[in-house]
Structure formats: structure tokens, C-alpha cells
Image (cartoon, rainbow, N blue to C red; front, side, top):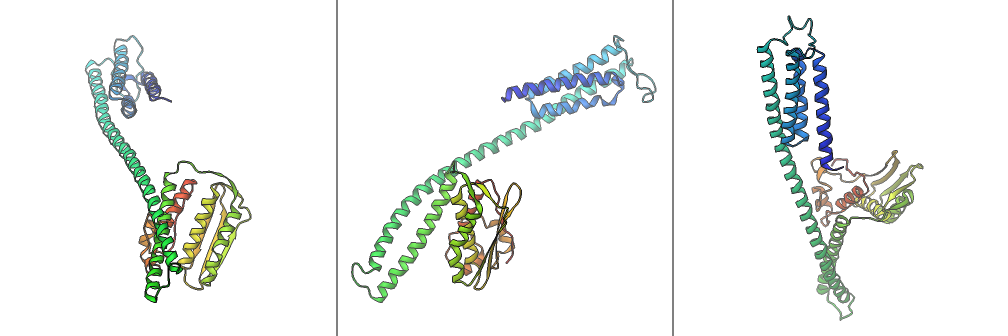
Length: 354
């Protein structure tokens, strides 16, 4: 529906309402009826929905309708229906009163249109500026993501070359190493692997943000959750952590990207295991909720400070207590999970305390 057709419809509707209101006023006291100022509501609506010119035209139309009504009643071309009991005497033939009401009514209409149009214009301009700023920010964000994508691809290639060289030296394919040399190579190798993991994670986040379309299909969520649990089972056993999986029998197939959902659940479980101490508990519960599925990952880990809960899904953010437990981390895992879940039309949140 075009904007011009909407404006035509609004103009017609307001004009029709003004005519109907004029007829109702005529049969309920005419100039004596205090409800004549209900015309003002239509002026406010016109000022919000229509242009300034159209709003003033509607005000003029309303003033003409009301003026014509009281003129015809004054000249007795049409009968006047006096408000018995509301006024002491009929006032439709009182010229001074009629002129006074007509003047106040007309000026009130134009003043209301002026003030409402002024406010509406200011708001529309502010909204337009806000909309343009959002478009500009999205464009800049897109450019930034494309730049990061190219940069991470390039860095990833260089890191792969460095890793290959370190592997060759570490495996003593170019000669033996003394203890000091081996220690330096191992430290360099460890750092390189961490940087490579960070670059890959950043690359994945950028690809998610730049991707317009995902391959979606119907897949069994129960099997996907079970595969994710199986993938982290060894990690849990290594820390003597009890890993429980509770999936309701009613949970069936869902529509989405199976790989990304499995990866998200796996990462959430790994995150829970990482920050849960030895002999702790990690649990995943999957429940049917009508038109949605609730997946809950709970643990007996270190928790998150209450004031930091709103920030946990921010890119590169890590909780202060998490940094004490695990110095190395990208701070991108939960941000990626949020991007994936929101791409599926879902919501992800965190509850807990330190």
C-alpha cells in the first residue's frame, strides 16, 4: 500500500467523521452543545498523520461545516434542536453568542493544528534522523565486518604457516633441540594455537553476521542434543564432573540449521564444564513449550557477578571471576551463541549469581 493511498484514505475518513459529527451536533443542540470541541480530536489526528497543508485544510473544512451549521440555524433555514434543561434559553438566535462561539471554535482549531503539527514535524524529523543514523551505522558495521573477515582470513593463513614451521621444529625434523630451545618452541606453539583459535572464532562470528541466508531444514532436536552431550562427555569425565541430560519425550523435530544449533549447545556445555570445579555438576534440560523449545544448561560452577549479567553476551567480554579461573579466552563464545539463537528467532539469557 502506497503512502499516497493511505493519506487519501485518512483524509476521506477524517472528512467523513467531521460531516457525521456536524450532523450529530445539529440534532443535539447545535451551537449550544459543548461537544463541538470534539472536532479538535480530529485536528490532532490530522496533524499526526497528514501533512501540515492537509491538516490546515481539514481545520478549514471543520470550521466551514460548523459555521454553515450555525448560520443555517440562525437564519432558520434548518430547525434548531434546543438543549432543554441544559440552557435557560435557546441561544442559536443570539448573534453575539453565535459569533463568539464561532470565533473561539475556529481559532481553537487552527491553534491546535499549529501546535500539533509543530510537535509532529519535530518528531518526524527526529525519527527520520534516527532512521538515517541507524542505516549509516548498519552500513558502517557491515563494512567493518567485511574488513574483519578479510583480515582474519589473511591472519589465519599466516598463522597456519607459522604453526607448520613450529611443528617441524618441535618434531625435531630440522635437528635436535636443547631444553631451553624446546621450551621456547613449546611456548610459541601454545600461544600460536590460542591465537589461531581466537582468529577462527572471530572469523565465525563475522561470517554469521554477514550471512543473509542460512540453510534451514527440519531435524530431530533430541538427537542433536544427545550428540552435543556425547561430544563433551570426555571433558566432563576428565574433571570428575557429573553430566546429566534430561530431554522430555514430547520434544520432537524443529526447523533450523542443525549444525549451528548443535555447535551452540556444545559450546554452552563446554563453557559450563570449563568453569565448574572438580566433582561438580552440569545439567542440560530440554522442555517443550508449545510453539518453542526451552533448552537449559545449568551448572554448579563459579557463577557470574550480578552486575555483570547484562554484559555476558557482549563481544570480547569475560566475567572478572572467569578471568581468574581461566586467563586465556576469546570472550566470543556467548556472543556467537546469541547471534545463532537470534537468527533462529529465539532468545538466550543467563540467570545466576557468583
